[in-house]
Amino acid sequence: MKFNSSGKIILPVCSLIIVVLIIVILIIIPTARNISKTTQDTYQLRSYLEQRYQESIQSRLTKERLDTIKQESTNFDQLLFKKSRTMELIQLLEKLSAKHQLNQIIEGTNLDSITPGENLSIRLTVSGQYKNMLNYIHNLETIQYFVNLTDLRLSDNGSGNSSANFGLEIYVSQ
Image 1 (cartoon, helix red, strand yellow):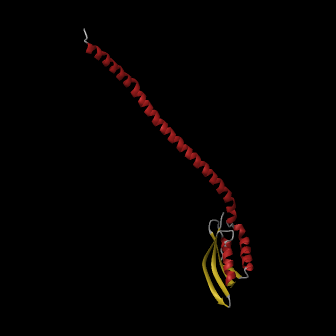
Image 2 (tube, rainbow, N blue to C red; image 1 turned 60 degrees about the horizontal axis):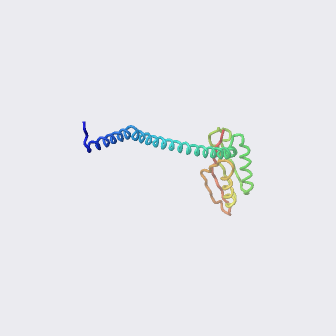
Image 3 (cartoon, rainbow, N blue to C red; image 1 turned 90 degrees about the vertical axis):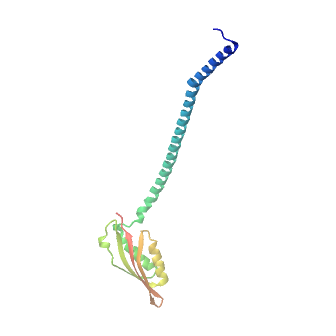
């Protein structure tokens, strides 16, 4: 078989094209797929590591907040009224009324039947100068226990004296 000059050129060119196609099909395409898969895996790994890093930062911040809450909660127990502190409360109320030069009557209490988790209810009637009474009420609201004043009624008795009748509720802890 004799090849003419164009056949001699076409055969090597066709063989070169076939070799290039084989190289592209067997080497370059699988390599491109591996690179693409590696890129996706790298992105997923980077996303996973970023998520874990954010979780560790959040965990550290939560631990710091927990430590702060623990420190603050040590003082919290002192703010809760306990059944064993009833005499303290009565003495505190008496001291406040004496400090503000007021007459005080404590009535309608459930001191004898206090149960933890409920409110201690006390009815107070206070009389004296109006300004002293307002200072007394302010001091009552700022005592160390969680106090709720209810049903406050102020009345003027004439000659610069006033009276107040109100309820005092204090949460009783365990």
